[in-house]
Amino acid sequence: MFDFFGLGKKSNKTKILVVDDEPNIVQTLKDRLEMNEYTVVTACNGNEGLRTAEQESPDLILLDVIMPIMDGHEMLEALRGQDWGKDISVIMLTARSQTQDIERARACGIDDYIIKPFDLSELLEKIESIVEARKTTAVVAG
Image 1 (tube, rainbow, N blue to C red):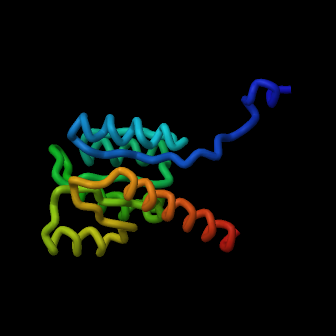
Image 2: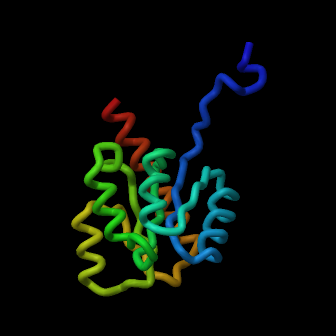
Protein backbone atom coordinates (compact mmCIF):
# COMPACT_ATOMS: atom_id res chain seq x y z
CA MET A 1 0.00 0.00 0.00
CA PHE A 2 2.79 2.47 0.90
CA ASP A 3 4.69 1.71 -2.31
CA PHE A 4 2.14 3.82 -4.16
CA PHE A 5 3.65 6.85 -2.41
CA GLY A 6 7.21 5.60 -2.79
CA LEU A 7 7.56 5.19 0.96
CA GLY A 8 8.39 1.50 0.80
CA LYS A 9 11.31 1.99 -1.56
CA LYS A 10 14.85 2.66 -0.48
CA SER A 11 16.85 5.06 -2.60
CA ASN A 12 19.62 3.52 -4.69
CA LYS A 13 21.38 6.88 -4.94
CA THR A 14 25.02 7.03 -3.96
CA LYS A 15 25.55 9.30 -0.96
CA ILE A 16 28.58 11.57 -0.97
CA LEU A 17 29.87 13.55 1.99
CA VAL A 18 31.74 16.74 1.05
CA VAL A 19 34.05 17.96 3.85
CA ASP A 20 35.63 21.33 3.11
CA ASP A 21 35.80 24.69 4.90
CA GLU A 22 35.47 26.75 1.69
CA PRO A 23 31.74 27.45 1.16
CA ASN A 24 32.15 28.16 -2.57
CA ILE A 25 33.80 24.79 -3.18
CA VAL A 26 31.20 22.98 -1.08
CA GLN A 27 28.32 24.63 -2.95
CA THR A 28 29.87 24.02 -6.38
CA LEU A 29 30.48 20.34 -5.59
CA LYS A 30 27.02 19.92 -4.04
CA ASP A 31 25.28 21.46 -7.05
CA ARG A 32 27.28 19.48 -9.61
CA LEU A 33 26.96 16.17 -7.75
CA GLU A 34 23.21 16.60 -7.28
CA MET A 35 22.86 17.37 -11.01
CA ASN A 36 24.49 13.97 -11.55
CA GLU A 37 21.94 12.20 -9.31
CA TYR A 38 24.09 11.86 -6.17
CA THR A 39 22.75 12.50 -2.68
CA VAL A 40 25.04 15.04 -1.01
CA VAL A 41 25.65 15.88 2.63
CA THR A 42 28.24 18.42 3.76
CA ALA A 43 30.48 19.36 6.67
CA CYS A 44 32.83 22.33 7.17
CA ASN A 45 35.62 20.68 9.21
CA GLY A 46 36.96 17.25 10.08
CA ASN A 47 35.20 17.03 13.44
CA GLU A 48 31.81 17.77 11.88
CA GLY A 49 32.71 15.50 8.96
CA LEU A 50 33.41 12.57 11.27
CA ARG A 51 30.07 13.02 13.07
CA THR A 52 28.24 13.38 9.77
CA ALA A 53 29.93 10.27 8.35
CA GLU A 54 28.83 8.22 11.35
CA GLN A 55 25.24 9.50 11.16
CA GLU A 56 24.80 9.46 7.37
CA SER A 57 26.89 6.42 6.32
CA PRO A 58 28.08 7.93 3.02
CA ASP A 59 29.33 5.74 0.20
CA LEU A 60 32.14 8.18 -0.55
CA ILE A 61 33.79 11.19 1.10
CA LEU A 62 35.41 14.12 -0.71
CA LEU A 63 37.84 15.39 1.93
CA ASP A 64 39.90 18.58 2.10
CA VAL A 65 43.11 18.59 4.17
CA ILE A 66 43.48 22.16 5.41
CA MET A 67 40.51 22.87 7.70
CA PRO A 68 39.95 24.31 11.18
CA ILE A 69 39.25 22.26 14.33
CA MET A 70 40.28 18.90 12.79
CA ASP A 71 42.14 18.69 9.50
CA GLY A 72 41.49 16.13 6.78
CA HIS A 73 44.36 13.84 7.76
CA GLU A 74 43.16 13.71 11.36
CA MET A 75 39.60 13.01 10.22
CA LEU A 76 40.77 10.29 7.86
CA GLU A 77 42.82 8.60 10.59
CA ALA A 78 39.88 8.81 13.03
CA LEU A 79 37.50 7.49 10.35
CA ARG A 80 39.73 4.49 9.62
CA GLY A 81 39.94 3.80 13.37
CA GLN A 82 36.18 3.14 13.52
CA ASP A 83 34.61 -0.15 12.41
CA TRP A 84 31.87 1.77 10.57
CA GLY A 85 34.43 3.95 8.75
CA LYS A 86 37.00 1.45 7.52
CA ASP A 87 35.35 0.74 4.17
CA ILE A 88 34.07 4.18 3.17
CA SER A 89 35.70 5.35 -0.07
CA VAL A 90 37.65 8.60 0.29
CA ILE A 91 38.99 11.03 -2.28
CA MET A 92 41.28 13.70 -0.86
CA LEU A 93 40.52 16.95 -2.65
CA THR A 94 43.10 19.48 -1.53
CA ALA A 95 45.62 22.17 -2.37
CA ARG A 96 48.28 20.21 -0.47
CA SER A 97 50.57 18.62 -3.03
CA GLN A 98 53.55 17.72 -0.86
CA THR A 99 54.72 14.12 -1.07
CA GLN A 100 54.40 13.58 2.70
CA ASP A 101 50.71 14.65 2.59
CA ILE A 102 49.96 12.26 -0.26
CA GLU A 103 51.83 9.39 1.43
CA ARG A 104 50.07 10.01 4.76
CA ALA A 105 46.68 9.90 3.03
CA ARG A 106 47.55 6.78 1.02
CA ALA A 107 48.69 5.04 4.21
CA CYS A 108 45.12 5.44 5.49
CA GLY A 109 43.65 3.78 2.42
CA ILE A 110 42.30 6.59 0.27
CA ASP A 111 40.89 5.84 -3.15
CA ASP A 112 42.37 8.89 -4.86
CA TYR A 113 44.19 12.18 -4.21
CA ILE A 114 43.20 15.18 -6.32
CA ILE A 115 45.00 18.49 -6.11
CA LYS A 116 43.09 21.79 -6.30
CA PRO A 117 42.32 23.43 -8.60
CA PHE A 118 40.60 20.43 -10.14
CA ASP A 119 38.55 19.67 -13.23
CA LEU A 120 34.93 18.88 -12.26
CA SER A 121 34.45 16.49 -15.19
CA GLU A 122 37.57 14.55 -14.21
CA LEU A 123 36.41 14.41 -10.59
CA LEU A 124 33.01 13.08 -11.66
CA GLU A 125 34.69 10.39 -13.76
CA LYS A 126 36.81 9.31 -10.78
CA ILE A 127 33.76 9.24 -8.50
CA GLU A 128 31.82 7.13 -11.01
CA SER A 129 34.76 4.75 -11.37
CA ILE A 130 34.98 4.25 -7.59
CA VAL A 131 31.20 3.83 -7.25
CA GLU A 132 31.11 1.23 -10.04
CA ALA A 133 34.09 -0.65 -8.56
CA ARG A 134 32.34 -0.77 -5.17
CA LYS A 135 29.13 -2.09 -6.78
CA THR A 136 31.11 -4.81 -8.57
CA THR A 137 32.93 -5.74 -5.36
CA ALA A 138 29.63 -5.84 -3.43
CA VAL A 139 28.06 -8.14 -6.03
CA VAL A 140 31.06 -10.49 -5.99
CA ALA A 141 31.21 -10.50 -2.17
CA GLY A 142 27.43 -10.84 -1.77
